[in-house]
Image (cartoon, rainbow over all chains, first blue to last red; front, side, top):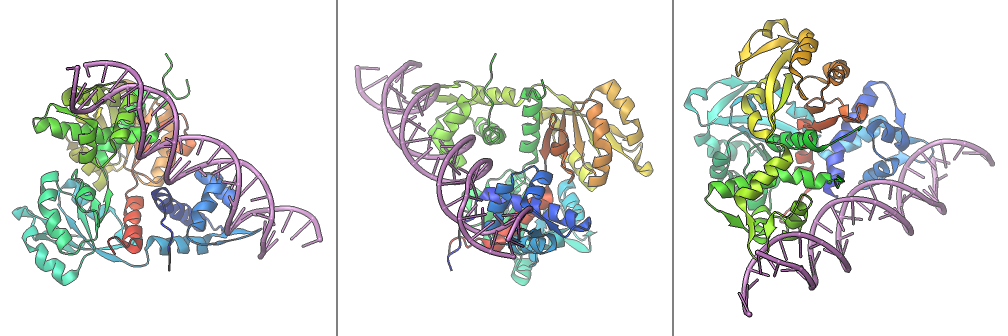
Length: 213
Length: 213
DNA sequence: TAGATTGTTAATCGATTAACAATC
DNA sequence: TAGATTGTTAATCGATTAACAATC
């Protein structure tokens, strides 16, 4: 079956729809029109209807959208109903915070392994997972077949490890390093989180925006 | 003087230019053409020239761009040369990791205060900064005039604190919470970092992309 | 049925890419 | 000078918004 390619702009909005619908559901609402949702989210009603219709007609003329139904459809589209095994590499401050702070199960993943190269950390347990030596990644991946790797390591370490990880079948990276994985492995999915870039963007706006003047 | 409005797309690319130029400089290079930079970054040469010319003509025909000069121009554009005082609120795993992990000084900010509401944390010192009680924010801000606030707190706490922070003169938020500050305070700059959304996007791609098939 | 709201097509807007004269 | 590469205008492409017939 032919499937339209969905633009990045649309994909990036899906998690936000999912969150908003969850809040509406929690508030006891059962239905909503694209117009009301647009006002709450700061979008246009047109855009919401266009976005949703990339995936199918989830609404009903004259009625709007059933909140619970729509949310579960978006969950399915996002793949949240299949927990993909993931490993996290680099248990520094950031890796530790990610491990403890993120609810992987509600976002389509299951964290199955933690790795670090620092001897003193090996064996320590976080969230019921022991920290393993990076030298055991090969063995671990052949047994557990993780699909995603979360890189909380410096650029150099990412450069050294990425070939191995791709060879071991990693299909997606959640990349906190400054290594441009997407350039080197076009067949692999990379989602970059660059704190520094985000903070510099804020600096730009504080420096240059003259809002409200 | 009239200043063109720069599009978000351009602004979001600036930190990445800055990073790449830093690497080239560190590698001992002194000049680069838009074509060569485009190949290294995975962009088009046209786009690079268009982006840079939003801010001025930093290149030279027949030669290209001086790497050091261009990087320092971008630093200036990003406002990295003025360290804006910032406070961080919420010293959980995430707030702690941000405090320790991020080099604020190289990104246009100076972290001047840490806050949490949890009694047991008050007084503890991280990166030479004592954790203060959120009840002292008013006093602290009137003395130290922070321009930015980093929110590492849950949605509810963000909802409760934001009015106060805006009233105290906070002009920019680095927002890790799920509270949509931008909707409520149109005059204030908000840079959202939504880990969960980013991870769900990765889930979508692992579920739906059939790359290389 | 009448009113409301979707799904979808058409129009607009903005961002990216291509082309080329200017010039180092 | 000749070659290279910018700065900038024009063309293209894609995303957003508007409009409206279909229909619940």
